[in-house]
Image 1 (cartoon, rainbow, N blue to C red):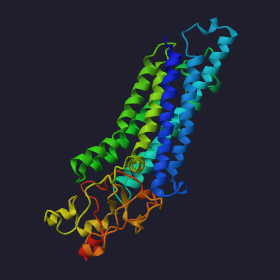
Image 2 (image 1 turned 60 degrees about the vertical axis):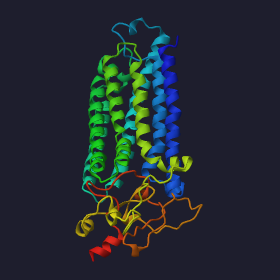
Image 3 (image 1 turned 120 degrees about the vertical axis):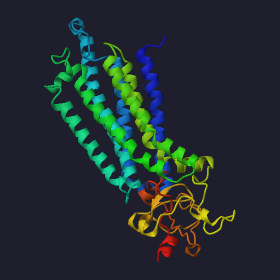
Length: 385
């Protein structure tokens, strides 16, 4: 029969390569989109560092499971042999290290998603919400660290003392509550950023469901965080089940932070083509319906002028007009394949170009609540006079 230590090792080291491969796939996908690894953005490099924190989580949970810690029934530590005592001290140090790696892993994944949301909402009122949530995350991380290292357990060496004088140094009870409050509340706030925009957008139902599904994956991170804390508070002395949920939460955070960036790579591998199969047309289409030219909605010229325009091109990615460039077609350019540029004479010119900016990356999202894609095109400028 497999012991709990062996079971944890199997689970953690099985999830670990999936997480690392997903980060690698994200970087390759971004390379396809941007044309060069040198053009990777700050969130891509933060995700590279997440490999370090994710590795730290996996190594730490296995060290804790093998050596246990100072979280022991009263009177147990006094019966330890010198070797058992040293093992408990060693395991207790890794519990402290585990918490640091877990906090870093969780908040770095939040940072990567917030950078994505910031670029998605540039020029929109939701951008202010992104900044507020970002400030809340920074405040929460700093406060949790201060309380963890300087308040809950003093002196700090009691975190690995066996036995402890202060029960908080072994149970981490106050720290776990504080970290959970800021972690889960910030995740709920982050869910609120993209979903209302997508729900209000005028999109075909199938595409809207896919986009909402991608940006709703944070629900699984919240669920994993709740289960992590539940088993932390309910597991008895010697139980390792809470360590399984440390691994589960860390892995889920890595998965969710990278999935929105994978479309270029998946499309290249499986020849999926454009995410947006409904290309914008102008004038009368094949069915003779001129109104289908702006099937996703078209606001007034004055309203368009007040907003930063976001385009969803034929490849299904959102971009702001200020970052678009005229495309240069041809194989081997290292850019994500785009539909050919439209001529401005057809009334729906779209400036497309090499995806060389963060705003031009594979954001599978819509632009503004209630607004369609391609709200501010050159043709509309002409109509607005």
